[in-house]
Every structure is written in C-alpha cells, then in structure tokens.
Amino acid sequence: MVTAIPGPRSEALVEDLARSECPAITARRARRAEEAGVSQDPIVWKRARGANVEDVDGNVYVDLTGAFAVAGIGHGHPRVVEAAREQAETLIHAMGDVYPAEQKIELCRRLSELAPGELSHSILGLSGASAVEAALKTAAVHTGRPGAIAFWGGYHGLNYGALGVTAYRESFRRPFLPQLNQSVRHVPFPDTFRPPFGLAPSTRPEEVGGAVLAHLREMLDGPATASESIGAVVIEPVQGRGGYVEPPPGFLTGLRELCDERGLVLIFDEIYTGFGRTGDLFACDREGVVPDILVVGKAMGGGFPISAAIGTEAVMSSWGLSSGEAVHTSTFLGNPLGCAMAIAALDVVVGEDWPARVRRRGEEIRKRLEVLARRYSSRVGRVRGRGLMLGLEFVADQEARTPDGGLAVALTDFCRRRGYLVLPSGRYGQVLALSPPFVVNDVQWEGFFQVLDEGLKTLTAV
Ligand SMILES: Cc1ncc(COP(=O)(O)O)c(C=O)c1O
Image (cartoon, rainbow, N blue to C red; front, side, top):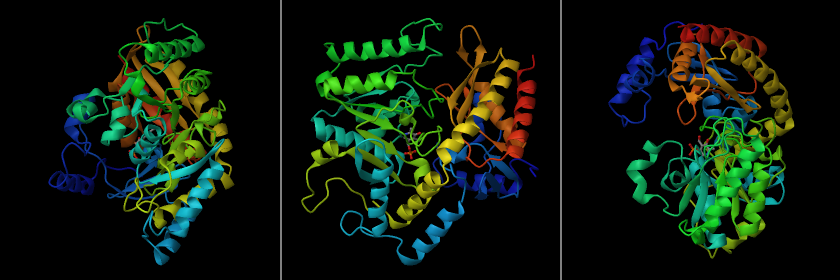
C-alpha cells in the first residue's frame, strides 16, 4: 500500500544525500518544479523483487521502468541471486585480462552463441558507455579512421568517448565540447512522426528512411564533412532514452548496405533493446540486419553492472594479438561475480523464452495504450515503441506535433503517488515511457491502466 510519497525516511535520507553528493546528480525538487510544477523529492529504495519495489518508508510500488530497462526478467530473479551467492562464496574478483576467471570465459562463449550472424568476439565492459567506447575504438583500429556518424536523439552514455556520439540533449555536451571527438557527425534519426528535412508528416515511412540515407551518402561525398576520418556508424535500432523511436522498415538494411559500400563499421547499440526487451532477442533480429559490432549492457547482468561489445572476428582481430599487456582493459574487466550473474540472467531470458512472451504481452499492452491514445487524442501524438518498450508521446498541439514534456513529467508524479513507477523520456521529455520487468502481472497492469486513465483525465482537463 502506498501511503505518503515520499515518506519521512526518504525525505531525511535525500536531505542527507544533498550534503555529500554532487547536486547535479540527484533528481531533486527544484528541477522537477521547473519542468512541470511538480515539487517532490525522490523516494529511496530499500528492496525489490519481481515487478515490485519497496521504499525505505515501507511503500510498495509496481515498477514499470525496470529501473532503466535493466530488470527485464524482474528484480532479484532467484536464479540470478543464487548465482551471485554461490559466486560470492568462491571468487568475487579475479585479474580480468591477465588471470581471468572461468566465468568470464563462459560468458564470452555464451555471448557469441547468442549474438546474431558472425558476431563472435567480445570485449567486456562495466557500463554501457564503456562498451560503446570499446566498439568505437575497435572501429577506429579497424578502419584507421576515428570519426563516426551518429544520430539526433541517440543516447550512448556520458563518458567523454560515448558523449561524443550521444546527441540527446545539447546541455549534456556543451561544457565538454572541446574534449569530444571532433570527427563525429550527427544526422537526423528517421523519425516518421517528426520527419526531418522539412518533409511533411504525411511522408511515407520508407521515404523518410530513404531521405536520411540519401543525406548520409551526400554528406560522405561532401567537401566539408571530414568524411575521410569517418570509420563507423553508430545507431540504436530503436532509440531508448530518445523516446522509443523506431526507424522505418528497410532503414537498417539500407544502413548496412551503405556501410558495406563505404567500408564503414556498423555498430548497433542494443544496450536498451537487447535481451528480449523489444520482443526479439535483439531488436536488429526483426529486420534480420547484423551489425559489425553489437553493444549490450543493462539487462545483461541481471542487475550487475556489466556490458559487452560483441564484434565479428574480422573487426576484432584488427586489434592484433595481445603482446602481454592488453591495450584495452580495466581492473574489473570480466569480474566473476558479474559474469556469473550475467550467465544466469541470459539462461533465464533464453530458457524461459522471454522474447516471444514479451512480444505477445507487448501487443496486448500496445492495444491498451492505443485506446488511451484515442480517448485523449488531442494530447497523445502516438504510441511509440514495441515489445515491452512502449510509450505515449504527448503533444501540446496535435497538428503541429509540438512536443509536450510537462504532461509526461506530471503524469510520472501522478502515477508514483498512486504506486506506479514510470519515467518521462524523449529529447523533450515528451514520452511517458514503460520498460517494465517482463513479469508484471494482469492485476498490476489493470491497476496501472486505471491510474493512467485517471491521470490523463485529471491533467488534460481544461
Ligand atoms: C542505448 C544506450 N546506450 C548506452 C547507454 C549508456 O549506458 P550506461 O548508463 O550504463 O553507461 C544507455 C543508457 O541508458 C543506453 O540506453
């Protein structure tokens, strides 16, 4: 039962945190008030199981965020917990590239079995950003060209290397511009709801994709693009933090062809979408396009921070053989605890057939969202995403498709007060995003849809 949000214990702890954490990091009340007139501090989590989270005041929530799309198979899955317990008792830390643990070897093998096509050789990382950077470094080593093409709205992490390709919010990049890779070129993502290049909203999806591909070709041939320095194209097959934006059919295939023509390394960032989230094991499976490097993280570790860049032998072998000192490594690379948890989590995703189950469940949930989109048609621009990565995109003006960030933030707060955790996402914060644990049950969904309907009714009333 949800009582007071946030409760007294959460409030006291967040005050305490403000004395010892950099103020930019905690999502505090001033920022929220500025965005949507909502003035509430965060709740502090105590425990989580399955789709439920309990805060330090004893409030229990249904988590429809999957804690940033990490808890796909649910929080604290018993098999992952068991693997962690067993591993903690034998070996918590090894020596990554020098004296690896057995679990690291097993995990690399599992990743090459699961990854599509010829993707067979991994570089393990500790965060999404570190795996993205491993992929970018690999492309630079392979092609001798350190630049990359990336997309507006793309989110690849915030470390310097990853931030160079991220184009989610200008404010995330501005203070660091001189430190970011100067050879990265950003191009519009083929968003069919807001087509780029002044194309009419009625433009056919394939044409939107075609226009972006044509632009890319022209840019690579153009005089001022530093195209001689471009060695990679990095893209999320479905944008995550960017607001669950899917490219039109055929676009990824076209991108593959372009990369083959020009000798560019194609990197798919599936940190958000990987391991069942979109109703396929990987989002790129839907169109059957295989990149040169697939980057995964988030759900991979069952809650442990671990990630990987999985490349073809051709691309990965460009690094050459290690001569004794690895030229790319880190202290905790292939940490046995994380590897053991990841092996267990991947076994559950595959063994319990979660991608197909997510696809079926996702279709049901999409239908429910479509009903709400029709009911509140003046404010809902479109239902976004697929699988269990679904969102409602809000607009202030349906015809102009003006994004409305305030409504998504206000709804997030409305839902939390009633026991449901959701998040706003998108470049303008205009998408109410659902990336729930796959195990949310019928009763929990039913309760959520009642609250969402009530919230929309209350907050869109004029
Ligand atoms: C697609 C994608 N790539 C990269 C990242 C960065 O991952 P991390 O925050 O673990 O560095 C994220 C995080 O949200 C992501 O969604």
